[in-house]
Image (cartoon, rainbow, N blue to C red; front, top):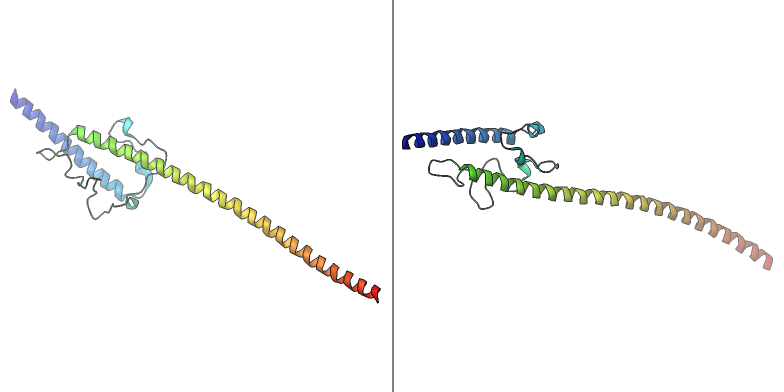
Length: 168
């Protein structure tokens, strides 16, 4: 009976190792693929772990501290290869689920922040457009006023000449 338990644990570890290796390879391929086509594919994880925001994901190159030359580290400074590993070198399924959930929450926050920044940027662009229109209107008004001022100066000179001739 103990032998069967050990055997099933070994099979489970092998299955997890294989799945981890497949996911690692897939993630590396996806990270090097600049096209967004992979975002439309389903992954083997549960539907609840799919993207929770409609904002576009940030490419790996734009993530601060993420370099293709070094292993990506989490906020605690541990590399993804040595986090929560048991003696056999595999990451427990619960730990993976928790990490995925944590990363998804972080992703949702980042997307929300990105959406807010995008909205603020669009609002500012709209304001800039309106201000440019207002400046154009004010410049036209200024041109009209300058033309009217020149015309009044000319009329004033003419009137002064007429008054000067009448007073002689």
